[in-house]
Length: 378
Ligand SMILES: NC(=O)c1ccc[n+]([C@@H]2O[C@H](COP(=O)([O-])OP(=O)(O)OC[C@H]3O[C@@H](n4cnc5c(N)ncnc54)[C@H](O)[C@@H]3O)[C@@H](O)[C@H]2O)c1
Image (cartoon, rainbow, N blue to C red; front, side, top):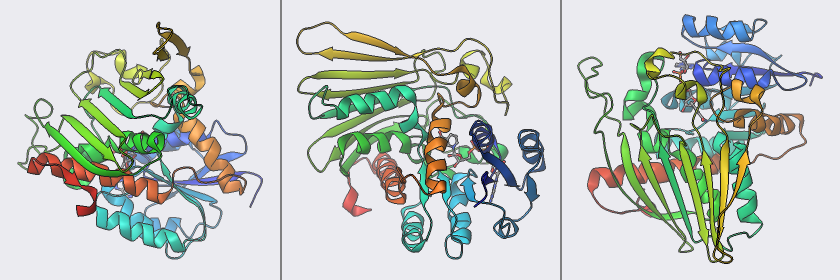
């Protein structure tokens, strides 16, 4: 391996470019190969990675022996075929965007291939690496609230952005909103609870967003609001409140962990570049924001003595400008870089990716069937 780690980006749209921007902030790291079927997206990405070789077919890209690691950031439904192209014959590390796949059968077939793979596979779950969320997790681990019994996640945010070909408007491409978006939160719940889900109940609908959009005569079928309750094997429980027509919310995520000693809350604003405009449609596929950034907060409310203790968590401006995820993409890449170098361990495994999809699919099924879904059914 050369002194510089060479990355290939597969799918260089909005998230692919966030990966390029964050890789360029690492020492001794460079994006040297790009694959995307869309010329416009490729030319936007080439501005960030001007020396990268461009491939029109993923099969040609994997023949590039100068590449040390792959980053997959293509639409959700394409992950399975790309992973099936790489996993059987290659032996270089992979960072694959969430959700791992859109169906449980695809997740399981990828998990089987990954078991035989001779290099690390890391599923990108950026929320674990947001500075405020990472602090929340550390403080829970340190026992601040005691053994957590309840985890409540609230995400109140703007509607899904427009994507290349608007692939994100249909469940068949995304796995459903509770897979596409909320696999992050189900991953956090599992990570904080140190446990797997056994049962999921959800209620949700497509009530406000995209109702007047048509694609080949079809109306988008993704839900835009939901409540989800997750029971864990140990008896711990978690909830998610999702609203995607709430652009005006100051904080986008509010993650609360409750235990016998008290309550820890983590309040995280959404991307400032979207907060700064009144019409998110005006943003398009641009990245970078140089205006005022909002800080995150962590609030600890012990049972005794009473009185919340509030800490502000700021994110480095350069990291804020390199994406929409509070610097988390950079911190995740730092750790993935160590894995590529052979000195780190994979923190988000293929099984973690699969379990998060499983909860999301159970929640989507629960909404369709108006009943609680045992995870064992899926
Ligand atoms: N972890 C996070 O916080 C986070 C945030 C945003 C997106 N994502 C994930 O990143 C992925 C990409 O999302 P996005 O927002 O960048 O979407 P996007 O539409 O902006 O970009 C996707 C890109 O993939 C390209 N593409 C389409 N089919 C392809 C194929 N078969 N092979 C390679 N490239 C292909 C498209 O032309 C486009 O340029 C999705 O899986 C999404 O869920 C993760």
